[in-house]
Image 1: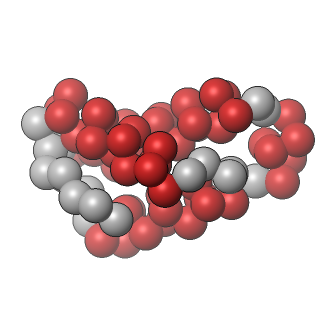
Image 2: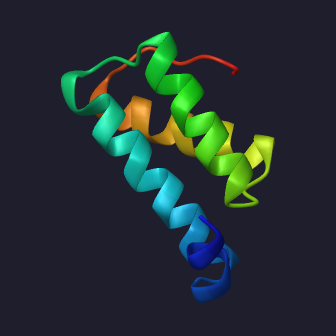
Length: 70
């Protein structure tokens, strides 16, 4: 993640987190483990809690998955 932080701007790091949510929701749902993994990666990528949740909700809504506030 340190290399990504140096190479990517804020928008690109948020896009990376969004892509992680798309992988998580590929089966239509997120497990607690998957949610925690994305949370930790987003934190290391300096993506705020609010943005991480907004990205999760947007991706979940696009695939009809359950939404939460982790």
